[in-house]
Image (cartoon, rainbow over all chains, first blue to last red; front, side, top):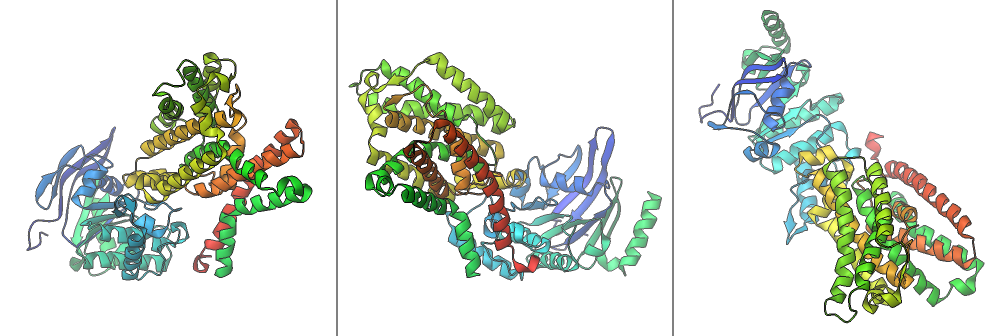
Length: 249
Length: 326
């Protein structure tokens, strides 16, 4: 799984997490390579969100090792995660809906000139980013008036602009229309074109299948499937594989 | 599209429209008294002290919070300053500085207390500021249970707010500075982000606890400034200084476009709200409306402002929503 160019971007080994007596993650190993789209699939309570929260610095692992570009590291806070180049978008928690599109793209990292926010640069860069993603939304439009797919686009554009290396999308297709799901897939492909890896977290295999390079399937805190797409002839074959693996587990 | 933009402009500037409507109404009833440069001058001047209270309420409302104690914070800051200044020689070199720094610092302390309880400890803003309102009022009466008049105070203290022109100019300068801060400086702009969505702002490194603390601190500073200008306007420190200002100030801020739910609003609009409150005070006094009837009028205004906030929100949504997602 390691690419010829060097170590994986992210390497997780033996990650454990307990919530009291509940063993939420039981020795999970996952690698993510630069620009790779990893479909992280599982039902509610499978541990996929816990894993993402650990990467985002919201939760802390109890045991295990995290390596970033081959070097051992600890993620103790959201800031630590962002410093590494990891951006995480949680379900319905990616935008301040009353703010405009450009204010959301630059939230917390507004460009300034002599201490004064440079709104002109924000608008110009935001318009450029939206055009790159094929979105026809104006920089001064309030985010609450964007469709679900467009909102995911704003979030993705932010990660692209600030040079993220890995973006965690937590259920980005939940409650989206067919067109919205297709839009999200295109955004993820655009991330890949920019060598940005992504964790596409979903409970719906069909949403992620067309774009993923690899599938990591979780069940009851354990990784039950980790397979590259070229080893899976169809989504139905993957479904069968998951059913067999979960029965074994 | 152009019609939509005009409607939006009208919604955002409804306070200015109401100002013109009410002024025309009062002028129609008594043209001699109202269409007069001295009256206009007085209207602006009388709006200054309550204008500071409106600004104080606005910055807190933008963060999605509320402050019931602002008027009493102004009263406490004014009375405490007055008691200190009574014992300070009027011609001492430090007296002018003390006349400004002391009320502002005392107001800031009141704001910091509210900010610590609401922002840092996450307590309910309504209940906290109801408690501090009672506390500030009690403390003020403990410090001095009677008014202080100008003869007992350094002339400089009264002169700051007694001069009509300088009062208006100082208020406008503060207003422009606050508008610039809230619009173009990160720390100010974050008040809107936190008011819009605390949790998301937090995820982007904007700490809601700090932002809310600083909003209350700023609000306290404005309460201290209000105390200076109330003292100048009243030529002393009355025992009930700024006592009735709380709800008219709230109405002024909301009519001016500051959303009750937070995250939206302009202090320039809030200024129009202050002028409207000043106009109503003057107009009702001019027509010899009894204090009780004036109370009823202001109660209607407060409830009206809440209704206006709701209607404005609905209409804004209707105008701004792109047709593609209707």
